[in-house]
Image (cartoon, rainbow, N blue to C red; front, side, top):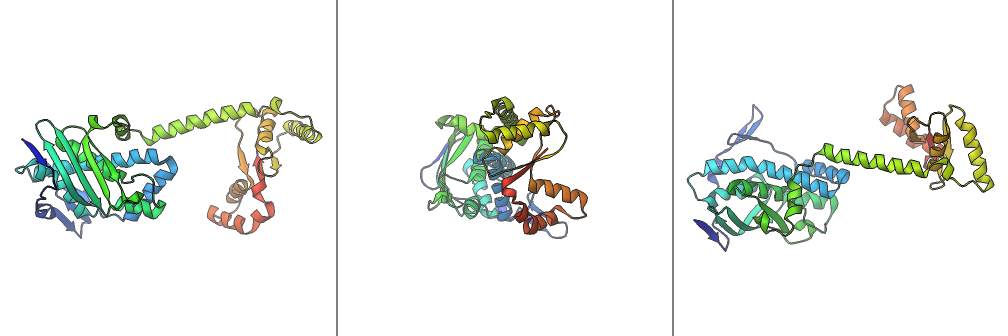
Length: 332
């Protein structure tokens, strides 16, 4: 039979959930029923989240965090079925929100819930208060222009989809992370979302290896394009200074010496370095460009009994000012 609650549905007692939580001091275990749990600092989660965003961008970070939330919800959905097997589907469903309250993740207030178990139909609206994910985003990035509770969205989608046996996705329509008074989510079947394909893409497996492979391919393409642009034949040597540079490069190309390029940013150090490499006998080998700072760190680390941390401190305090490494690069 359909369960319809246009207004906020009544919430069952969470005493049965509290009885499942056990702390074993001596063994180092925390249990929720048969599931092992951990207590984790929100700042640690925030730091990991920040690194993913800064390394791979928000779009990729959303996918990772939503899939993380989705996966963690599946075991909770099974727990809910086992715990309240003789209760209504609505009472079973409320295990998820009540768990989030107990775990300190977010406070969930149901606004409306409509469930049709026979058809596998679901429509729900909830208010989130005190979202830990939004709080961490505000701490690390400030106010955003879009909702930021991605892991929580993924959890809600995975939990409801598992219980209903049908794909149900949630979207955050309000979020304290973008300056709203509270967070609000709406959940409904995937086919009812206008951007269903985009939502689905977040939950499709897009591994880190795939992402890195694509980035590597892009770098290779850029290097190939750059190599064409820096062909010595493409350098117009009409002025005396450029002619003199090309003459020096041709002489250096006949030897195996390392060459130090000096000059302000944007004067063409890398262009002439690429040209030199193509003119030399080692044109078929890899060109390794290094800044003076990078070269000195490597050299000192290999030839002195000091750590790279010490080397960097020495370079920063003494050597860099002398060499003016902002305008110098070393090429092999």
